[in-house]
Image (cartoon, rainbow, N blue to C red):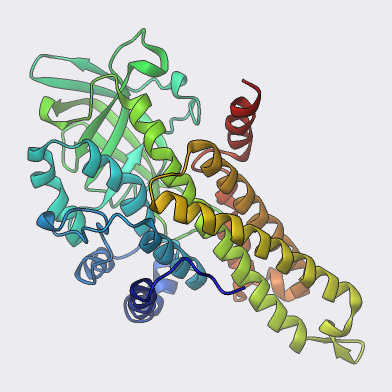
Length: 380
């Protein structure tokens, strides 16, 4: 089915992204995977190409276009290229709305130009060793000292944790406030007491630097409070729908691409003197996955359009995230199986997609959390 949600401008942007990937990312990606981190030059190149700060006002160097369809194009092309390490989606779609929507005029002038040029790489630090999706369990705390905060605690599984120059930290500012006693504090590279742990060794997304962060009596200026004091819960809930949509978009794009490459593989691979595609079981497998992808694509595209128009709610974003990522996981497993022993070899795209994509049902809120959000909306 021909997709009908994009205009000629979106199609032109897609070509720009593909050109960027072929020139600035793919020639270096194998080395980045070995290094466990991407080059800062790639971020600067993305800034020069206009791929950073798509929704940031032009006066700060951004694209000035809040149409989420451009972010969807970016996510789809990066997913199809298998280049998850250069986390432009995290920067644009997850951290960006906090800086654009909550920052004061002074904060915007200070942070957004670097955000858009690639000089300032960003991260958000919410997860802790003992607290994932449960915000009430967050223990990192900030003590009010008049003209500054004193921040103590630790975070883990922080994407862009090594490269980040600016980290939005979720910290407890009211000890007895539960989930509603949290604030967002911006910690900048070089702040005394701010230390990074090791670059965590993951089963996939090797070039995506993921780190532990430690805050030991870090002095955070009062002007680095982002949004309202004790307002982090509302701020996070407001922006999580876009984060989950970005993950869902990548999920269906990955599943579709895996079906495409597996379809070509079974046409070429022979067993018992004929192509695998001549076996009824193989045809049924491909038929089932292609149909699941087509049905999911219809729903995800509807969600993309709704979100671009400002009409997507948290429940449907949760549905999209749950369904698309679980589909991605199933398709990756089935496609690897259809590749046989070759599917287990890292030189084959399906093997990398299998390990890189496994995190999709976990970060941004696990599948179980998505079901809980949906269930509560229906049952109270």
